[in-house]
Amino acid sequence: MGCFTINHTDASCRARTGVLDLPHGKVFTPVFMPVGTNGTVKALTVDDLEAIGFEMILSNTYHLYLRPGTEVIAAAGGLHRFMNWGKNILTDSGGFQIFSLAPFRKISSGGAEFRSHIDGSRHFLGPEKAVEIQALLGSDIQMALDICTGWETPRKDAAKALEITVDWLGRAKKTWEHIRAGGEYQGLLFGIVQGNFYPDLRRQSAELTLAADIPGVAIGGLSVGEPPEVFAEYLHLTAGLLPPDKPRYVMGIGTPEYILEAIEAGIDMFDCVLPTREARNVRVFTGQGRLSLKKAENRLDFQPIDQECGCKVCRNYSRAYLRHLFRTQEILCSMLASYHNLYFLHQLVQKARRAIEDDCFIAFKNEILSRRKEAVE
Figure 1 (cartoon, rainbow, N blue to C red):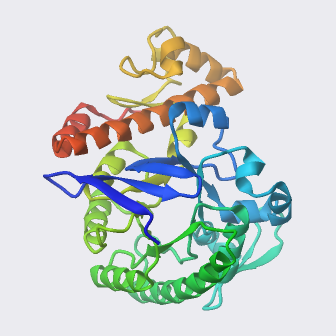
Figure 2 (spheres, rainbow, N blue to C red):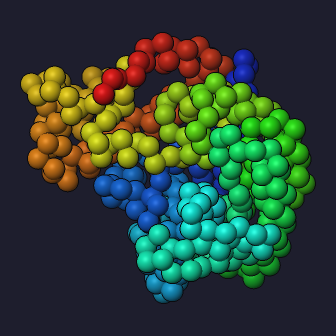
């Protein structure tokens, strides 16, 4: 199951570069993955994603299972063919979406019973079925079903969720191994460390997750409402519990600040809907911080989004033009702003890789953060 090679570890911290060897090609790490929830990264084509340089995107098991449904994707020959994406896809198990549907779901040791947010129909998702769906999708990396708990969850509830998550991982692994033995599906399975914000539960979860001996490990239950300093504390705590030879993935982080913190902690992979969600509200990333182009001060501002950015948007369009597109509700606004935001993060991570190779990541991180300030809405 050796799929990950470490190329270099920074001399001053845990940050490292490496490469994942996956069914649809190599992925160089650290890597940010755009989120294509419904089999598309919102407002972008696969040509856009390839032009930026992405080697892997994320799609969502829960949403694709409900619509268009596994029958459609199976008939298309899998998700890669369905969406015309020739590179790698990571799929999450649907656990976070079920977590988000608290009023509409019931969790037991067997799995999660939930009502569709689309039409209210009832469904049941267990760890075995989650693996089967993701294998049908053709995921290059699939996630085991887990229970995510939010900020300020009582300890007894966090402990119970951990217990069920560990049991589900064992059942998921058996199903995954059975499917892989058939020879057609060769995607990898990652487990997810939970434990909420209790250090001993985090340690217990890491130990039990690693005991399953699976190809990679994700850190779950972060960026769920906790303050930034708590995020950083538990990020570093949990990352320190994981062995160096397995790829590490933090789920659901997409700001430059959180990404750089994760890289320093030795995280290899991260994803978030934030860059494209912000773009649809014409909020864009720059080297000086996030910028809201809807403000009136941009009406006559004909400079690019970011003077230092080399993306096609910054080469060809102005802040004033994007503000105009937003105010007139033109679809092109979301397309251009989404392209820029994802290009910006991709470039940030590429620069981080070079800094790690040069053993100067901490200096690089400090320089980037010193220039940034959050724009005020």
